[in-house]
Length: 85
Image (cartoon, rainbow, N blue to C red; front, side):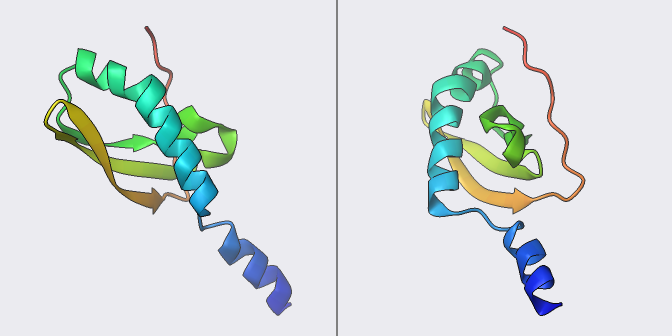
């Protein structure tokens, strides 16, 4: 029984490889859209990096002409959005 509980808890954690992947996609695909929209700070669902990240969100902020991910948050009820452009 404890093994099942541990498996569920582990699904609520990102590995360093997951964080690197999300960051790479954020830099390559999302930052240009944020710059176009003149975004400054926000929270964004991570489904943009793949279906398995749909329950994760990032908190980001503008740093000069770039953006920085401040933290990763698990959202059990997280939902992605459709990006256009």
